[in-house]
Image 1 (cartoon, rainbow, N blue to C red):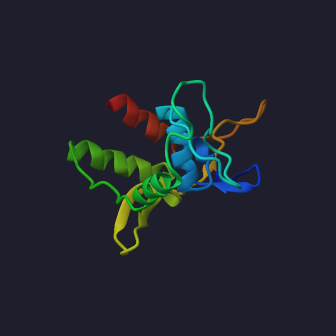
Image 2: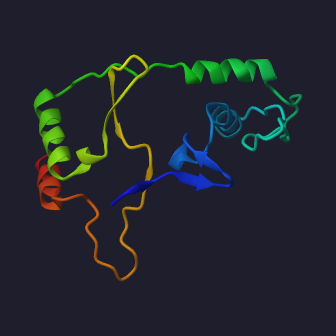
Length: 153
């Protein structure tokens, strides 16, 4: 199994579901329209979000400056601190994660100060399904260890 960048519609996606959004600003535009119902200002080169809807509120419902502020805020959020609820179970899960091969690509990434962020991602899309008619291992090197761990929960 290997990951790939999501290159679609002429850009490399980095944000949103399945990395389908190219920038934090576009992610904010998309979320404002689709999750909150707020229209956003039309902007050259930006394709996410909607400048019009059918409610009675004047559109756009957010100013370009407020959208810039939101994008800045989102881009500068720090990673949440790691908390541990069940250290023994989490440590056992970490061992399985490594044993089945996930840790080869999915690992903690450094933040701007060089501290580890426990993201455990290679930030790529993965096709985990075998092609039709093909037999392929989907879960790393040791699927049996993963299944045994999940059954022990």
